Image (cartoon, rainbow, N blue to C red; front, top):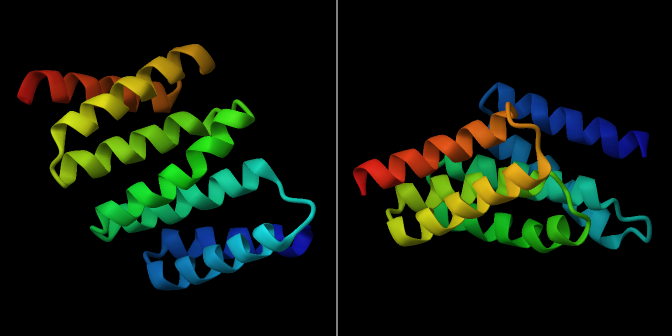
Length: 140
């Protein structure tokens, strides 16, 4: 497990230095390890999917970002993970930028509803969901 934790930290460091292709390499290696492991960790899988989707969002690959979020959502729902809200927020941002306002609005509301049910009111993911809902209702 230390090996996996180390790889995860290396990938996160690459993101911080905007070396996205290197980060994606390590996240995909981690994903491969997790998918082949009998001791899959749901929270790690969710985080890997979210990190990969965030990189694709930053690179302008919005459809790919959405695809990776959608891979993490069933796992997050199954284990009632708070990362569900982050996945919904990332999908919302991707749909805003595509632009597909109908889908963006749908996921923004899912993020806000899930966040209100799972997170403390001052959590940054709820703030993001609120901002997205407000943006979408005011301008679209």
